[in-house]
Length: 215
Ligand code: AP5
Image (cartoon, rainbow, N blue to C red; front, side):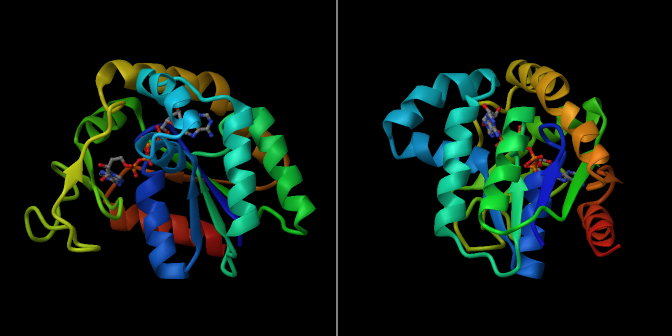
């Protein structure tokens, strides 16, 4: 089963993708994580996208489609791919359809996670991640069981993203409503859209995602 998790910044796409990886053995493909890895390793492309990402603007279609194409070539996913943060434009959505078709694969579902803007602000400004494995935490709603130790890998280094501030979030939200929200109609018209309420406890949202996928 290949799926897209669609939603604004802070909707919980990464959080729910990690759950699906653990529970269903799916493979998460997050373009945000790939771009951040390119920045950390100092590649030419990473340097090129750094300022764009910090502002909250979208990286070019060409770059992100190239990243996804590479991963589809190199990763085997017997239990399916989770596209997290991709596609974000109609051009990317068309490209994903063509890439999957060229590999004899299909897209099974697009899960739209709906969360209001006020909740997004508090989720984004309170977010931090494990520096070793990328597990996602929050100052209030998702703390590690033992303070300072990652539940997933035992790491003790945590970091916050440069774009997790109110100014960048405003730009990211505007880009979401302008460039990405048209995908809701695009996938609805294809009969692939499943909409869920992304508000509530992480476990409750996970149950809604599962129900939507199994329906
Ligand atoms: P990306 O990394 O994709 O960021 P995003 O889409 O803005 O989404 P986030 O990662 O911020 O949020 P999320 O929905 O994953 O939420 P999370 O689970 O972490 O992209 C970053 C940048 O890269 C873009 O701005 C752009 O520049 C570039 N880029 C990436 N892909 C691109 C593309 N395809 N095209 C062009 N440019 C691209 O949750 C957030 C917080 O809330 C966490 O702290 C979590 O613990 C908490 N939380 C989660 N669920 C709940 C819940 N149910 N209740 C309470 N708290 C919760």
